Length: 155
Image: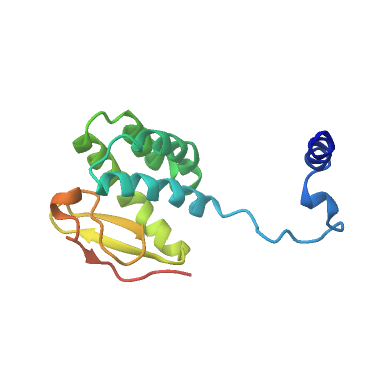
C-alpha cells in the first residue's frame, strides 16, 4: 500500500501522464474554449431553473460570473452577478434571461455540438441547452416544453 501511495505521489509530482509524453506532443484532450467552459456552467443553471430549483443556481452562477466577461463583456458579467445574487426563482429567471440575451448568440456562433437554441415567446428571451428536448427555464415545470427552436448559427 505504501509503495502505491509513493508511486501515486511521484506520478503527481512529475506531472502525471503529460510528463511521460515527448516534448511538443499534443495532449489528447485540449482545454475547452472559454465560451464552452462558460456554457457548461450556464447549462447547469438552466437545468436547475427548468426543474424549478434555486439551490444549484448560485454556485454555478458564481463560476459563470468569473468567466463570462471574457466571453460576453462587462454586461454579461453584470447579468451573471445578478444571477448570483438572486434569492427567488423569479429573480433568478429574470437575471438568466438578461444573461441569455447576451450569451445565446455567442454560444450559437461557437456551434457547440449537441446544443439547441430556443426562444420563449412569452418572456421574449432565448436560451440554449444540450439536446433537442425542450426544457424551458423561464417557466420550469409549469410550461417545460414551451419554446420554439431558433435557427442555427455557427462557424
